[in-house]
Length: 146
Image (tube, rainbow, N blue to C red):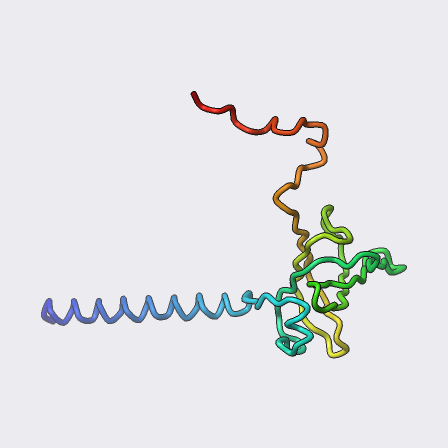
């Protein structure tokens, strides 16, 4: 076989290998991909029952209810325009509280309830861990350069 044919076969195998890796990577990511939606978008019909998605918003004040099993909670997520009931079974993050931001991964149920598989609590830019609560204002800032 001529050297020219060997190079062509090697180049064709490399292209097939790269394409195969791309297809495998895309199929793996497809299972993990989730659209980010707000309660208003969900109420507006942007979500399909059973579709994996992320729901973002605020936890409505007075809406957190703990069920007797001790691990299931129900609350209402809001974005100021619409409210959406959410159900989660598991341990919630320490920062999860009423009137705080949250992001939940899960799916819509046919009865209009968002069933979360995972909840992430969001904090604002002024967040300070409880361990640093006694720290004076501005103590963490660097000294000005001369």
